[in-house]
Image (cartoon, rainbow, N blue to C red; front, top):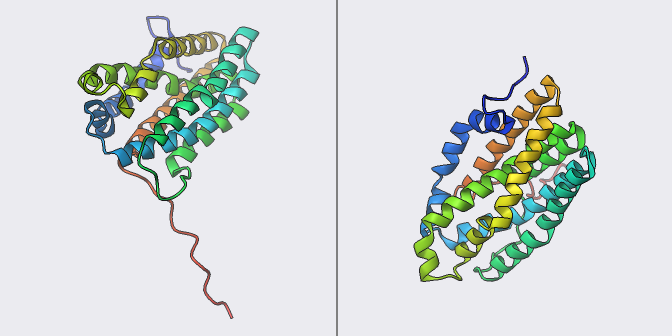
Length: 240
């Protein structure tokens, strides 16, 4: 039997409840705790910003593909505008943050988690029905909105000491009313998609949301605990 809506009537409440252990793990991440109290090492923050900038390129593509499947012009406009925001407003923020941080020794490349996350979203948006695509991209809106709001509270002392602190600039973006409103709209659109979906599609929506939430947890965590690619660029030995 397919997943059904909880007593509240919102399918997204069901998704939120199903991923409670993952959300608890995100809330307890050392990376977010140290980001909130201002003790996060700058190299770790730079690693996160670099990976997030790379991720946004793929996320924007997934949003554009989701918009192409949308059931009506208003819904399509939201996903398309969100795609444009990811490639302009948020990317501009990342570029300005990176310019204020110590330079890196090498050009960044997507980590295994980063590549896996945005590749999953693009593949889902390109091959799955619209309700599943919408559910897959929702965690990036919802979790960032929650994290931003929580960090804004915990980082208040950091903000008072140094309003231009790079962590403060990041927090102010995702705690901004405009972003919180976008997250609420994305959630409402997923609820609407679930109402029109079949039972099997709702099952797939739950799975897609859960997979994306797993990637959210891994993405945050790898800023302090990087996953590296296996070495594969050594010169080949003589075969003669």
